[in-house]
Image (cartoon, rainbow, N blue to C red; front, side, top):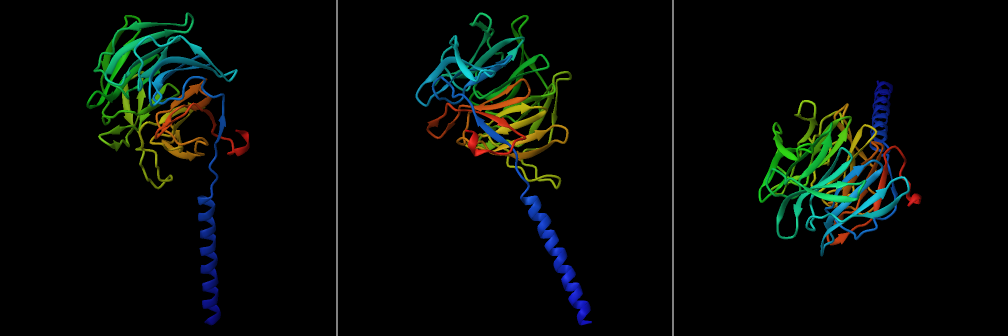
Length: 332
């Protein structure tokens, strides 16, 4: 009997050790991703800038230095890794404006000039390096809105006009007009973020009355239907618990996967797989944690985080993310 009890005890101990080993293997699963520092932004350090991408160039305009609202614009040559100054934005200097690309031209509108919420809207022609004022945004003057182009449809919406908002409008360049689109049943918010994967826009984060929002949505431009996806604070059994909800974040997409980075002075980054509707944590930004940075996608295969702020510190650094590489401290 003593030998039997001893055998049972040893078997139980062995099983426990195996389980602990398995748990440690899971806990120690390597987090991939490497950040590479690129050519610093040539303009003044700033936060809350607007951006759009045309071809291999990423354009960044407007923003706030902590002392001054800006109207300068710079283009990043991603092939040569350098910046070129372009024609100044012709609206009043501002921050928290919104931009998108449509049919090879860039558009920026809305924002805040230090006194007024804005609704004016402008088109940039990269061929002539000139700006033209277009029809005012059809919604209320606001800042902290999102803007994106997907499937040839350009949208602006949400933001703050003295109240938190959830409306969306589509811009038609043919007749220079705006039309409200319906169907977004998510929560009101400002300072959300959006990325595009395979012709679908994925939208989430942001803040409403001091509460970071957890709902996450996919917009199909073909049907103009918004579909709710897994919440950003989901703690289901098929994945790690998320800590993604935040405001003032940046986003981009690389090779069919989406990324939400920084925000609320964080440097964390999460990767979204639209096929599984699950997020995975990646290597945190190697630069300072920050809010109100710019996220850039180039050629659907390169992702960048640019500028931003933390407290009273404003940044001019530029970081490219390599999601499948191991983190390396020696390449910056």
